[in-house]
Image (cartoon, rainbow, N blue to C red):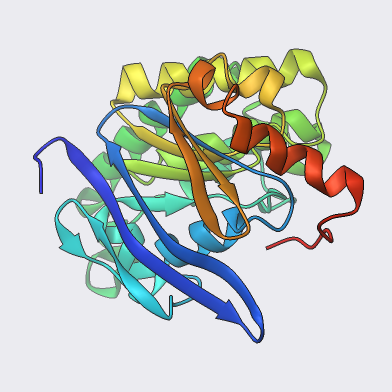
Length: 264
């Protein structure tokens, strides 16, 4: 495997009864780039993310992350290897503040270990470092002025940004994002993708993103994979993929009643 490839998906297959959600799907992601997965409802996008992140197990095929076979590993093990995902609907701890949500998202806090919990010197330095990191991330995401605000008081767009911030607190190398700009106004949707670019540049992260709002997302990504009926039907630079006749047909067909809508 090439040294610059961080994620490699090879020939994934997944069936749900008579429905073939993934049909021999393969893709590669290079380090520190932003990838976009597009396609109409039911094309298999979320199933792909679920298989990569360990939420479900593929029937066939393999997933490699940083050269290691992670196929079928549970999500918590995959996170510790440096790969994490978000969901369409953010689920923070609503009664906690923005800063508290950031801090509880860290891994391996020594203060949570019984043998260290009574000895402040064992964990106080760790917590100071994490607080400083959280402030820097919140500042980059333009949420620093809300650090003492309960999550329940945030807008939908601010919750999406908080979700991004919580992922950054995990010190992972790659993030899988499921509709980070879904159901929010265009101004904030553009800001979210701009922040994703900044996180890639400032923290050297890689992103694989599902997004339906192509008018917004295509301006910010490096490479696009298009899916239809469980298959990759086109891939390449954004301007090439959106002009591919197979991609145009995949989006037009459902409006003609040729394909039922079901989310996968």
